[in-house]
Image 1 (tube, rainbow over the protein chains, first blue to last red):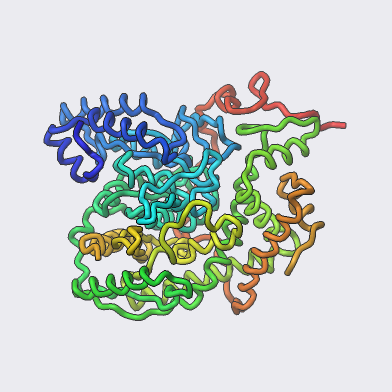
Image 2 (tube, rainbow over the protein chains, first blue to last red):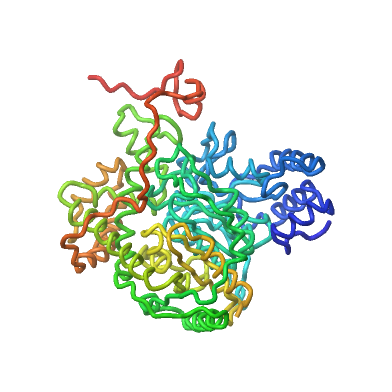
Length: 481
Length: 95
């Protein structure tokens, strides 16, 4: 069997169209990889029968040469946060262990319409709350990349199963969702490309909700070129999502024609935080030179409220989660702990169905919204969010793109940062600000540190300017410093 | 602002999550840690700043107020832990 784990979607599309390979061969290859690499725990549910059926349909279309989708015959992983009609969708929680949706999320539907093939549902932090994929009810995911000292590392989170599956060659690409960094941070930890589009680009319909004003779907891929193809297939205007954007969807692959010469790249001093890993800082400085080499102008900018982004996020996201997760009441779907008394049924169901991190956030969220504390916490956070958003607006009057590291550190060993929730939250300190402002941002691997671990760089762009973000990402990709 | 056990119990009730007595103190410490940390925001001058509820600035999509559900009661109650004749079943709530 040919090894397809080293090629990307862009190459596979070529081979498929030249009829050198079939979608069924690709699918069979990845099924074998998934079975062999079960130990990494990337998938919660395998959908091999569905995959083979979809592959057969794609092969027939390719034979006829008509009706071909952008991703015709390309096997992918679907984060287990996207509802899939007739296929269990757990969101990584005991609460939804047996939940089988009878409708399809818009993002997954768009992908199937574009010819993508579903291999299975990927593991994730419970309800997307986590940065190491250690809060999943279905067990933690292992990063396929090992350090020189051979430790088992986390893949990042919350889209950890998606990232580990792509990095270990179990699928060409996978979907992710990003609320505060859940696409970019695992992509960074696994040496991949992770793209969070502008808020509103991808429909939230059928995505298990965490924090609705922040949640945004996006792809995790091996290459920037694949990220453009995946995003193209995922996004659409959707009347089922009240915050779905009607803005024109460009051809994202046009990033290849985008010239960075003369473009201004902003460097925010506030992102060079205390505790930023030395090797990451060094890589960052090297990336600055790469942009100089392509004729971009590098300028210092200031985003003065950056320091406040993480605490702002940890008020707003839990507050929205406490409202969104109120639906898990043990009555309409999901787990139920029986009781003679309805209120007791709710309380015991939720105590037993949610894991510790989810409960912690729901309690925090309920507290900051409760009478007497609403103004001091929630309202205050909404105002600071406005200031953070204004910082970006002001910065984008002076520059076209912003370059930062994606994470303050590289992938860490499993078991670390588990005792203090705050230590885990700090993983997202560099990704959260763009989430709060709803901006498009990509993480691209800029090479490895001395211990063989990937370092990700983040590019943040103006709203709906994914093309320039992709273009800048590809500059880093091409030069792998 | 630091909170005590009575607030943890009260918020647990509001969030409808039963908190075991044995878990209470650990949760209290964690919450106080997190709240102490978010208290940082008090330092920010937000005088005259409007709260930002959403980054979305296009007009919200309105639709006609009519049902377009193609789902049967059977389908909708399919995932329910307890159902009867197309209804969800809960413990008796009337006295």
